Length: 333
Length: 266
Image (tube, one colour):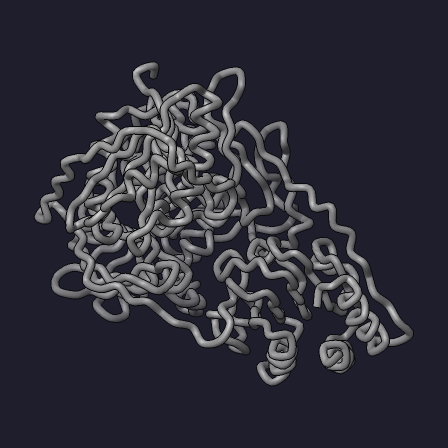
């Protein structure tokens, strides 16, 4: 294992610039590299990387591997796995970090298999164990209801994917020096087994649930799609988005696209209003990142009161009209 | 078309989060009393995706599940949804495997099954949320992999798969055999039918051991694990819920609005 040294990052390029996750990887990568006295390198794959290699140096890398090929213009699972695995076999990094993004989620386990390495996904915290020098990765499990710390002791590289927006991004220092290595990234299109036919960008109407500052969600206790109208009304009043629990969606009161939870959307608004929902583990998984949770439920023992900041016990049909009435008055001021 | 679906049994995620307990000493989850485990929600969608392909194109669906105890129940659930055959993989050697070890055991079972066109897995298990097994399994089987699918159609002798992306989706064409991991966007899983439940109850579900699928003991030994959980904890929520009251519901509601305004939340 002493044959493996250094930290390698798999950077991402978005619309011709370094993606935010790349700066975050460089941020945490630099911290870990300084702690262990190792070199920090980064791999950039794309069709036209231009000066982004130099840019990555300024953001903290000691060495940048640039792999350019028209086939790498967008993330391609087979092509990127090939290029990244090749580099890992030559560079023999001890630690390999990727983003827990569309690309990283796909690429990391394939690399772990090809390199017979160890992988921990969706890291929210990364540190070095002072006794062994091994990377300790902390990741949410059970939909965020628990945290597990994972170590890779016996195989190399130690691979982790880092959840976006959880580590401090690197800051630019144009005076930093380093080396940009242009790799020969030969990707034979005939070896690509899966072909990308098209990419479709989808626009959503109104406020995206994931970006909303206010989310109002209803649960099984709402009772009907007609009654769900009150949830929509409250959301409109607060310029928020409408969420729902799995049972509410399964009842057909609202489209599945509004489901918040482990099998739905993950939201982290400033205000999450949970109406007539009990707070199943899988639902809390989707909203526990909210700054403030308000619970309205008839059952004072409902689990949702255990995670909420404010609660009102009672029938939502009596509470919401009065609440909205007062809100209108307050918001008009 | 022969489809193999890998499913996992997990603690029911519908329990209240306050009932979720762990044992930090053993780094394991304490199963909630009286709540039977269920099929992992993403794996249930993988069964649904298989059933959709069967409805449209005709297919034979074989479900496999590695686990202990009542693991046959999740296989039966899949059978009652429309799968044709089920196999469990049960052996004390299969306990506490990491993603790599799990993928290895599944790969050996799939090799024993023999001929197949498509392997489906959930995008991640809804307990440990790792999202590794499908891709590692595909690499071990030496077949192409497409991850996080929201739609799978038979097309041009292969499969046309829509992959979920942050801002939309991507359409890919994959040859068969291949492995696809399925996301929740594929649609709600169908409810078991009465006939399905009867058929599932009568069906013999063989239980394969390590010996049956020629497992190399070194590959599943604890010393051979690639990853190790060194700590498991429940995040401390220092939240004290402020219950807002009034002489009736209406008054409490007005008070709630006032307090949220005072706290600068709205």
